Structures are given as structure tokens and as C-alpha cells.
Image (cartoon, rainbow, N blue to C red; front, top):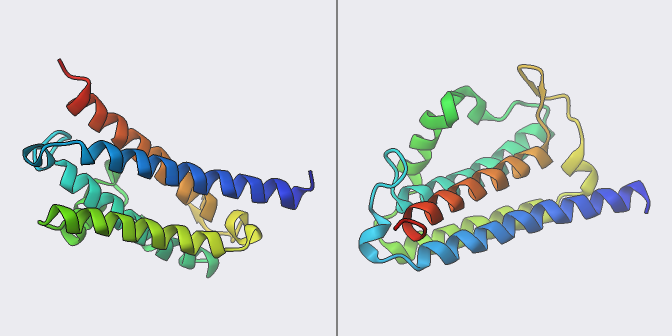
Length: 167
């Protein structure tokens, strides 16, 4: 397999993993009773807050990819603190919707926009080192989505543990 084919395969895998975990988290939260959706289960967060957080990171990652391509550190790094708590609070405040159906639609819309944006990026752009660094860490586009997938998986596990695995 040529290097370009290998990179394309890796890109497709990253996008597929993110898509799959999003399907799983939506499937899980759709099983919750309306009262459970607003129940605090993770620090100060409800499932509604968690979903707003996911929507916010979709838009954040699109903007971050654009910044990286311009050789700029994504804006969200200015908010770096423990577990991104401050930035996450901003995202929840901005994207949380009171109506459940509208919130779910917003999750689907942001995920589709994220997927569409990253699908159209050339594979070279997706993995390219644009020279952007944060405390010596190489900030590249593919890593944004790998980190997002890891975060969504963690939230899915937290939702499952709290709502479905408790006795």
C-alpha cells in the first residue's frame, strides 16, 4: 500500500470512529427518560450539558482546523485549564438548548458539518505538520479528531455507567 493510500485509510478510520461513537452516544441518551436528561450525573453536568459540549467542540474543531492551516494555534488553547473546564462551560452555555428535540437536532447538525468539513480536506492537509505547537506539542488536524473521539468515548462510558449500569 502506498503512503498516500495508508494515510487515506487512517483518515477514513479516524472519521469513522468519531461517527460511530457519536451514533452510540445518541442511541444511549435517546433511551433516557425526560427527567434523566437534566439530572446532574457528571460534576455539574447533565446529559443535556454533555450534548451541548459535544456540539460546541464540533464547531471548535472546524475553526481549529482552519487556524492550524493558517499556521495559528487554535483559539481554544487560550482557555486551557484542568480538563478544559472553563472552555467547556463556555460551550455548554452557548450551545445548550432547552428543547430536547432541538438539542438532538443540533447534535446531528454539528456532527454532519464536522464530518463534511473534514471529509473534504485533502489527506495531506489532515496529517500535515503546519508548524503549530503548544508547549512543545505538535498540533495537527488529525489529532483534534482523535482527541474528540477519545473524549466522546469517555462521556459515553460515563453515561452508560451512571444511567445503565447502576444497580
